[in-house]
Image 1: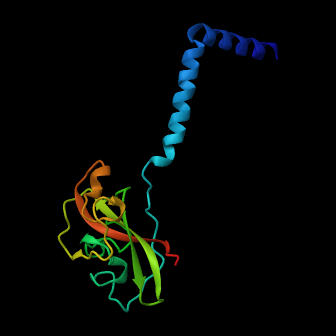
Image 2: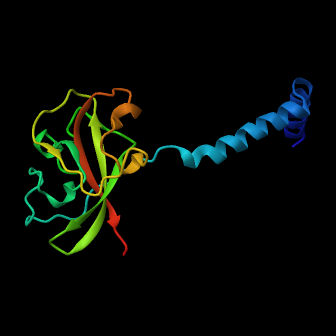
Length: 169
């Protein structure tokens, strides 16, 4: 046990010789600031959708109920599904949201629209619906921005819609 005590004493004294109390406090301050800023990072909302309805058209049509605030090419026509990106693309970690009414069950759902990035534009099934869109001063509710700007490859390919939850009244 004596060698373990000697090791800790030696490393503590060595650290004390190389650093000052101010540098220790500065490092601690940086660590606490970084921990406080962690919740401000963008959120990946890449979950899967869990509701569908054939009455309002299928996921390959612009009339599909989940597409009430979409703007772009439907990934369901570009090799993906209504809620997952096609192979070779990556979902943008930042998104816009909308609240869409499902006529099948009469409920409103909070829907996240994720751009799939990494390939050139798909060009199939263009869909531009702006129901309840907010002006650009509310970017999280606006679909006119390039949401692929957060990805390493900022080329836009298509857009998916992911249900986040049921809207409360």
